[in-house]
Length: 163
Image (cartoon, rainbow, N blue to C red; front, side, top):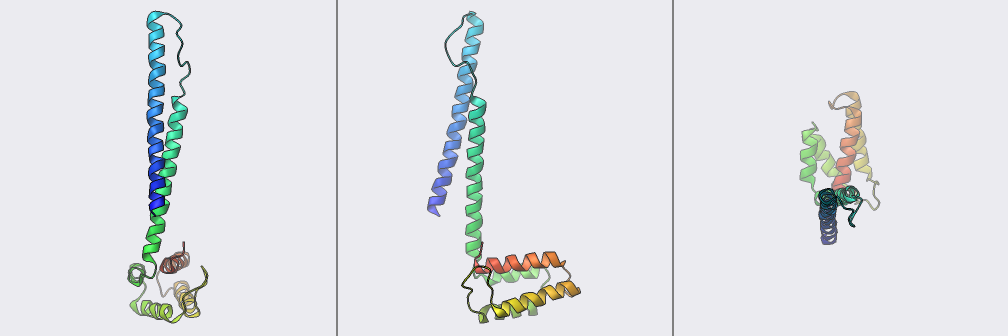
């Protein structure tokens, strides 16, 4: 995690340096053009303003750094929720899952062996998941099936720490 932060900070520093470079590039071209107008002489100096391209490069590097920080934050959040049943309980309650169903789910998680592969859930968790989707289809659980499927699969993935 420290390496991710250091890398992101370096990218942000590079972005800031590109912004400063773009500013100085634009300013020096502007000063040469101003001097040439006043003296009516052709002087040597930067003739093209490259500051726009440098500015765009700075923006791109900055956006990449922010995206990198966001992804690292998301990964840390997922890792911190791994095995956190209370977070899972609160999330399911928020979406109208009854406490008896949540207790069944906890029993299923505790009974099933820890998955050895990502996406492979235990038999009891699978049965519980199907029961909850059936409740959604039948209207017992007042939530659309697509939302129920998404909620349950992401909640299970977060509990197991899958990204």
